[in-house]
Image 1 (cartoon, rainbow, N blue to C red):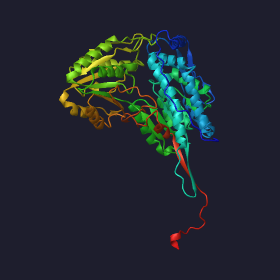
Image 2: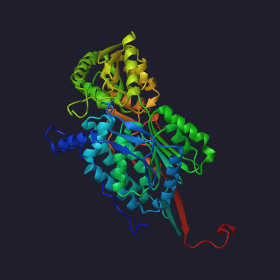
Image 3: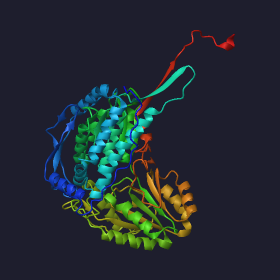
Image 4: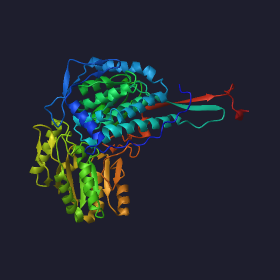
Length: 541
C-alpha cells in the first residue's frame, strides 16, 4: 500500500517529429524499416509466464507488397485461450494489490520507451504491417500511444484522489477497485495507439486483460508486448491470443469471470458481442462493463460563408489521410452551390497531386489499403458508381492489387443525398460530395442529421457565427466529436477525448478520465468512530 499521496507529472502531448529529408529521425526510421522488412519476425501467444509458438501459423504481409512475408504469428487453439484466462486471473491476485503508483509507473516507463529507443521501431512496424506513411505512423504509433499512457497515468492519480465528503463522527472513503474478474480487449488494425490504450488503460486500473488484436496488426502487437515487458509489466497482466476471433470470443464471453469488454471495430461485430454478453448474463459473477467505439459516416457541412481553401483542405486531409481508414475520416460532404465548383476544383487538383506507393518512400501521401477484402469491397463500390446515373467520378476510380492493395483516391459527386456512398461506411479513400441550394441550409442540416445511423465525428465550416451556433445545436447528437472550421479527424489525447454515440459506440471518450472510470468498481467504506449502543432515537423519549 502507498505511504503517501503522490502526484503524477502533468502530461504534455508528445512532440511530433517532422521526418524531413536528411533529418536524424528520418535516417533512423529508414534503417529500422529496411532491417525489419528483410527479417522474419515470429509472434507468439503471450499466455502469462509462457510465450507459446504454435505449429499453426499465419503470415504477416505488408499491404503494399502482399507477396512479401515479414514474419508469422501463432494461431491459438481453445486450450490456449483458456490458459490465457487462467493465467490472467492468477496474475490478478498480486496485480490488483499492487500500489497504484507502481502500476502507473510501469506505463509511464512504457511511454518513455516508445518516445525514446522504440520510436523508430514502432513507427517502422506500423509502416510495414499497417501501411501507414511515416507521418501517420508517427502521430499514431508514437505520439498518441505516449499520450494515452501519460495522460491516463495522470487521470488515474486524480481518480484515486476522489473521495467522499467527511461526516461528523465517521471516516468516509472510497476504494476504486479493479473489476472482479478479467477484461477483454479487442483492437483494430488501423491504430497502433488504440491497441496500446485499450489494453493498458484497463491494466493501469488494476485489471488483467486478455487481448485479441486484429490479424492485420500483429507486427506492432508484438512490439507493444515487448515494450510492456521491458517496462516491467508482470507476466499475465496482459495476455495475447491470436487466431479465430469467433472461437476466442466464445470462450471468453462464456467464462464466469468475464468482467468487461473494451472494443474498437465494426458496428456489426460490436452488436454481436453485446448480444452474446446478454445471452450469457446469468453466467457472470458481475455485470460486465461494455465499452465500444465502432463505425462512422462522418460529415463535412460547408456554408456559403465558408473559406474555400479551408473547406478544400479539410476534405482532402479528412478523407484521404491513411487512405480513409479511420473511423473519423470525412466521407460525406455537403457543399453550397454558390462555392461548390471552386471547392471541387481545388479538391480535384489536390488529389491529382498525390503520389501513391510503398511507405518506404516517404514522399508518398497515399499507400495501400489493409487487405484484399477491403480492396475488393472498395473496388465494387467504385465500379457501381461508374455504372449509376446519379453519381459521377470526378477523380480517381482506378485500382490495382497486383503488388499491393492500391485504391486510387476517389472523389464522387452525387445528385442523390441518400446515395449508398453517402450512407454506407466504406473505410477507404473514397469520398462523396453532394451540392445543395444555398437557401436550403436549414433543410441540409436536417439531412446531415438524418442520413446516417452513426454519430461519431462531423464538421461545420463557416464564417457566419450564427450559422455555426445553429448547426451546433441542431446537430447535437450527430457527432460525439464535433469540429468547427476543421476536418473531422485528428483528435488529440487530453485535448479532444474521442468517441461517438448512436451506432458509433458507447461514447466513453478514449483519452479522458471518463474512460478510466469504466474500469473501476468503487467500494465505499464508512467507519463509525463511536458507534451507538442503543437502538432508541432521542425523539422517542
